[in-house]
Image (cartoon, rainbow, N blue to C red; front, side):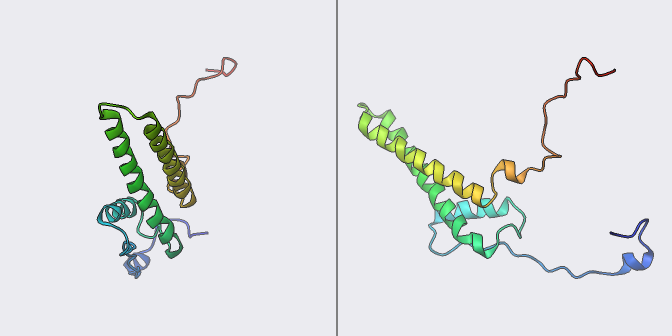
Length: 136
């Protein structure tokens, strides 16, 4: 338990040394587009969020995000063409679903989903309705 009351002038005058935490650098085997994803994710969270053990998962997440983006582009090309090849479209949609599942699993494993990041106390809640039997 901390001490109660105001801090004394002596306590306030003490400078505590803090170690600067550097954000993890993107692996060199990522492409430029994947590296952009890496930095977008890493810069959106506190500097010490990603431990060394998460770097491989984060790199894979970046790869899958870029792959999902490319599959989405292929789906758009297929849909905008003169003839719609239903077989090719179905195959692309299956691949898109697979990428989405992998991305979601990686996000959950590293606790990057909105549900895992947002604190329950600060989440917006629907307006509480008073029950009829509660007094005014």
